[in-house]
Length: 515
Image (cartoon, rainbow, N blue to C red; front, side):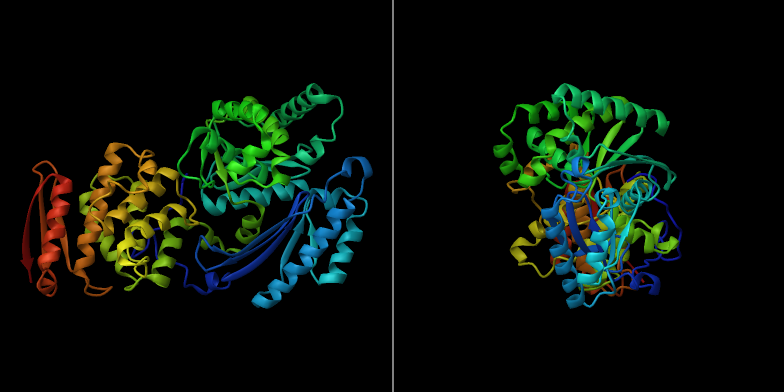
């Protein structure tokens, strides 16, 4: 995560007091948004009053409203029927869920079509949903705000590709700056005449103009938003044999984009889409979209490219958040909410964090937040079968919808949670994922997991610390200091777990008691 704001608080140090139970946050417990794009129409219902809300419901219909718009000036008739049917269904679902009126926006196709207003009137008349049309700059702003939902304090440039347009927005210090829109959506690009040479020349000219107007320095981070970009990233994963197929926060560079563009150009698209799990409608647009991405990174020269699963819909949610909630760390807030909802002893995660922290004296704030997140999640998988809690914990950390979490950090946290329930990782079906970590990170994750495993044996309550660890790394000496109140909890199993932790540290250990 880049530049996450750290707000001090009396209970949680640099992480601040959790806000998920604040009345302002509870007001966002169930929010439904509809995005009527040029290619797809989607309903998302966000649930959970945490800073990083869960997707209570998520449905997409590929309607291709913008297909043929450049030639006819009107919405695709078949796409219009499908979009109306989809919105009618979404309105009925929202009513059944008991959520407030849907917030619905339409982008390039509806705003440019001569019958766009007629379509909006029909939607209102048939479904009761008021469809707001936003211009390209507003679309860019909302997409950039979606990125901020996952990365508070981000810097760089956001690029959102839709069916009929592509938007750019500058991010600096967590604020949206210059915004531009362009006609580089793949539905429009396939209507360019003159063959591939003319298409490439057109893309090159538009990107050059965007570069001149954005005045963006090279070497920034590029956040890419939109279904076509995500499909390209999924193909890049397939090309590389990448082991973690979570698209959010997946990273690429200019060389990878070029290699994947060549890979797509020579591939059997039907066979490739089946391997990657991409819809046929989406895959038809990928060869056009990848030409845009290749030229975009060639001209703007970003230092890296981060895939964002958060876009315009998340930006609409971000718009409704109070400023205090916007600034919070989405990872910590989501994990705190999960602990409150699913753990056997909500609140113990804070004590566990304090307990394990002495083992990581050199951890910077970025590593500290991952340690804290792991401690908050240490018990949320307790309902899983005891034989599979280690696997359930790893899956939960690596596959969950969590913002502000790099892939390496997902695996680190997952491995720590695996060791929370198991001393061994050898032979695990997750071993290919461990390759995303260095040997030092693997060892550190094991220490964290075994420390949590020990600390979990010393439960008293969520308000009283059972003891603490003293760690002298130079002398390789580990001491567990247990309070007299917690002394009965330190039995044979706890002693075995202390010895396992000492072994992971390569240390000698001892136990002492205090009143």
